[in-house]
Image (cartoon, rainbow, N blue to C red; front, side, top):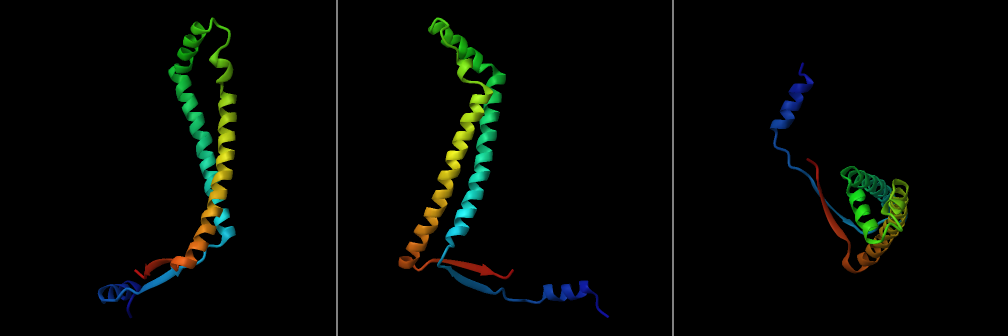
Length: 134
């Protein structure tokens, strides 16, 4: 009686030709493209907020904000301070606004690209994609 390992060894030694399939992408579903671009935009929004937070924390830890604040207060006789405008809540609020705008733009851009591709397929015939079975 042969074992599974022996059967697999026999299969691996035999020369089998890999099947190749060529398919043509002729349509991208609009709502699938919108959903996928929205998910990519959410991931990008999270990365944006975290990167703004990390950049602020690095700049704050190095003391760069304090040095620039001292320079500006010496130039304008102390009437206003950079620390009043550049705090953690302001940085996170700006990051949230940028992330929300980016979310909207990337989602709309994904929908537009899907629509343009669906129109271009009528002229070009689609994208030819090849697959193999190995």
